[in-house]
Image 1 (cartoon, rainbow over the protein chains, first blue to last red):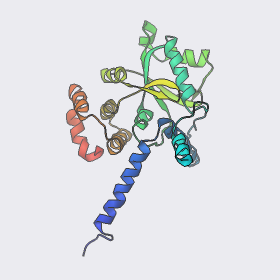
Image 2: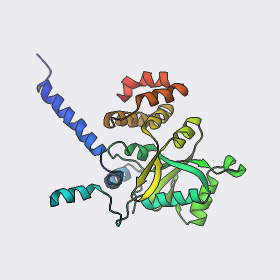
Image 3: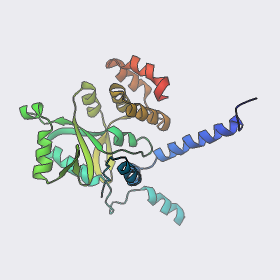
Image 4: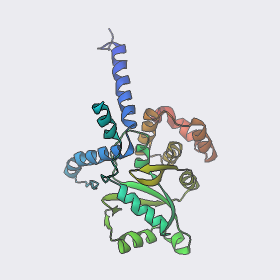
Length: 60
Length: 192
């Protein structure tokens, strides 16, 4: 019996779509990417603080 | 049509809205103009982000060529501290200088590969500021040199998300600096 729970072509498509999504995000203008980075910093800040680490969220 | 126009403007920087980091880059350009540093380029994670999706980083790495002079040779960071902190009033936050709200790390070029990478960096525009960012091939070579876990992750990101890596240029750089064998050993394991 195979360990494969879903057909391989279905899983391949999912992984392909994920990779394409990353590539689409990579095409955003750099200014947009930096705005995203600041949002990521805001999200990570409380998690890092709980670990006793600090992160400075960039400002405009 | 309106939707398409709005959609287009979503991704085009608005020159009237200040961007995060553009004031920072203006200050660094002024630092170059004032002769505090000879030249600079954006390196590290932010340079990678020019070619990949956004991801977490804590700082803006600035690789710089120190200005001429004995003082710059002995202590290349002190003219930067004098200029940014004493003259311009910016502050220190942990190991970074906080320039216009952005944590910056200034790294003098200490290796011939870093110097070559800086000289060949891409001219780019950020908001309405002219600056430079390292080319992906040089970023990969520098990450092969540093070879920490986070460096390997960045190489993998570049290969995964950026289709225009110049393999000939990359091979040439790696061969000239004797990193090619190391790169090939790591390639299938960590990068691709």
